[in-house]
Structures are given as C-alpha cells and as structure tokens.
Image (cartoon, rainbow, N blue to C red; front, side, top):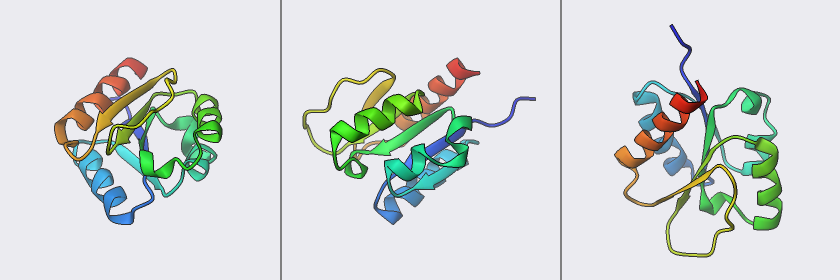
Length: 116
C-alpha cells in the first residue's frame, strides 16, 4: 500500500487555507498548510511533498517567488482570482478561483499519480 501524497497548501487567508486543506484531506491527501511561500518551501516537510497548492495572494513579489518555486522543484498549482500576468514557470499549473472543487482535486491527483 502506498503512502498518501503530501500536499503543501499556501494561502494567507486562514479560512480559505482551511477550506483547501479540508477538500484535499477529504480526498485522502496529507496536507501541510502555510500562510506564505517562504515558510512553506523552507519547511522540513517540503522535501517530502508531491506538490504545492499556492493561492496567488500568497505571492507578494514574483521575482523572489520564482526563485522559491524553482528551489522547491516540484509541481505547483497556482490559484488565481483574476486575470493578471503570471510568469511562466516550469511545473506550474494555473487554476482560476473561485471554482476550485473537482478541478483542483483532479489536478492534484494527476500530479500525485505521475510522482508515484
């Protein structure tokens, strides 16, 4: 039996972060939550994560975020609330808020399946 996939969830807004955590845990993922990308990508468990789900509101500066995403080196699902320029980064999938339910779960499942 394979261990459940670990997903880092990064969102500055506590209720949104908890909502994402609940949705992913309900589907069998192990979730570690953070308010910011620096804390998430530098966390002890980041190396064990299969991917990260990042709310665009957690990204204050794209120049430093781009380096953090590259250092993380794993797939990132970026949740965007409005159309705005986002740098094209390797291993990044963009999903539009607020309709995240099944598209988010399916994207994370697909990432986890390819990483297994």
